[in-house]
Length: 505
Image (cartoon, rainbow, N blue to C red; front, side, top):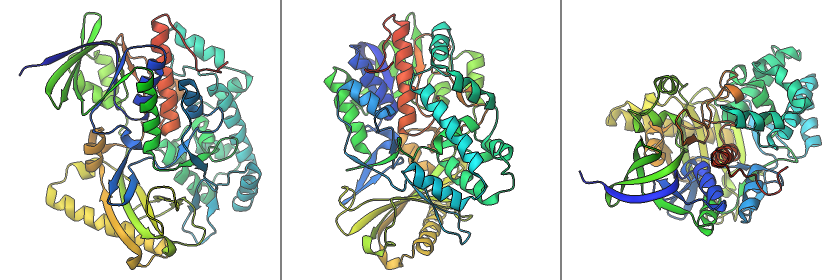
């Protein structure tokens, strides 16, 4: 097989999701010759979109954090010289139904209103929420100084120590505790209703329930819906976030190559040789550095002879993330409950607890009088990726009907209200995103994998860097943006050209 040599670039970024796009745009802004390789025909990855006739669906991510002043997206966009896309705050950020006959819990944007809601919903637990707020305040101040939380050399340590303040040292005493541990220390052990609420919310962000989520992580994500932070609904679709980053990448001289799937990485002297499949066949591109935003589980296959034995073993032993079953549907808007919020969550045994996102009139996702409805539930990936086609199709149809039936009961929908529905499984996600077995989210924020105990962006191989939802601070577009920023700062410092975002202290 003939391999066409494409030449050389300074940095290759692998993967055109939000992490890869952010890393490539930031490097281009610094004057680095950077090429971004994306296997799909469009950028965005799990934050991309697809169309069905007049309807636009967000593939995975349906809400955004970090658009507020000082948020991760706002800081990066300001540094890149591009405008934040049009969006509106979600208020409530989510409505959580525990399916126990009690009133749903609403995550209000106003902190005072949220405090009143939680006192009414969880009486006697204010000490727990106060400690969560204190941890959040400490973590927010710490994160704003751009620390390298998983240090691997002296420069990394310097960035970490320079970000540490007294509050960080105090909250650091909780390292190793889970959210359940924190609740127990505050006298809340046995509060089943609060435990169920925590399990539902934390699973969305942590991939883990309360008894397996690091307290230092969980306390922060529970505050994401409240001012001065917030959760946002983008106008148009989630794709506009990727389009803005592509614009910045190209504006600053970077290159984006779509339909270029990386199939191999190897070290040649002081350079990296990247083998890829493109519409023209097998090609090779060389670079001084490579930033990989793919799940780290991809590396053993991409580098069968390059990985150090100990690092390979660590990657092979990583906890297996979940997959997702996602119903993409369209309903008549007048069939929805009055004042239906944009994001809802419901505890459910079968088909599993649901997270639902509903479009708004005029947001570009559906014609007037209609609403897109996206409902997702976590699932093991192997259950779906190992099935033969006939049982796979039968099971897919069965799950689609189960989710629709649960939505009909929950939201009071008549079957005639549905205009469209289809189901995506881990097998479909694997094809769309290229993620092994269609995994979603990162590694799970267990105390043994959180922060300094997690996977580092600086790998044992010179010139190979990682970013994405498996790195600190985890999943979500705001989280992967920070991981991309860390990788770029480490890479540029290695080149003796360190940088910080405009306006950073």
